[in-house]
Length: 317
Image (cartoon, rainbow, N blue to C red; front, side, top):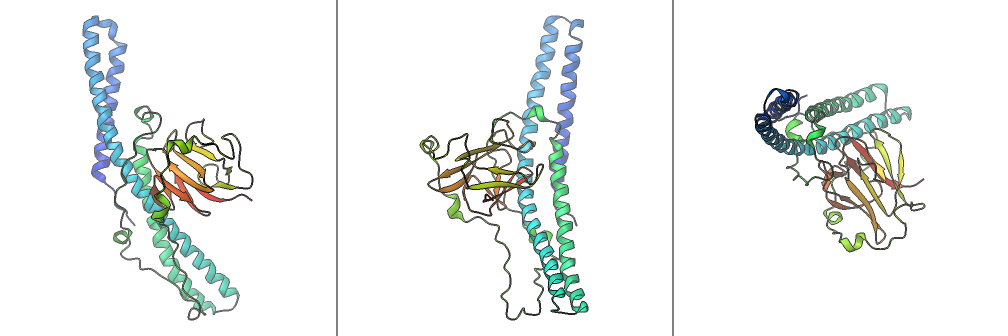
């Protein structure tokens, strides 16, 4: 199953990358051969290529902004498709369990599990396609680290959400009935959207400087934690201080070493007994249960996506 990708954007970005590579290569040759020309000629030629490099950098960074928007949409789509894969996987597991209880015969189980398995296969194929597109976009700048400035970058506007129905017009929602379906209410799909009321609270500088019950270098005892449930280091549990910074830089309380994570990416903060996540103007954004947010209140069970890392906000054990 294919998933739409902006081929024109890919081609233009690759063209700009090649143009930038050639200019940098020529600048290296200018330095290597500077002894063969006068100081004035060297300075003039070097300044010309330096100007061309700056123009190429600006053009490529502009394309990266467009690619970041495409990636933000794909990350959101991936989260939603994953939830469908999990849903149908659990339905198959439930069917097997009910079969062991004797609710229906082997033939009934085969018919029902086949129906769900077909839906699961389509969503797994879609997930593979989405991941393939993400990989193609991410590879574009994997070898261009020197192009990207250090520190937080301006927040790019999130594009309109992709309509999965267009890509899945052949996948109708399924709910496989079991023997007691007539008396048991149907299981609702998990709501992955964030209540707007959770994203409206604003933080003032004075709040960030106020006294806290747990200092920056200490962990709250028995409070919530962030559990890394997907990504390198999966299974790691991070206790939360009253203020916990997350980012690629080693000065963060939670350090996530990955190209799509900004040096200062996000902040988890406790205020008035509630917990909040704040996006520190990261390049690739913070996603709460699949929706991109700038500031939002956290509730137990919420999932945060930062780059390729998925973390769950939960009680400490």
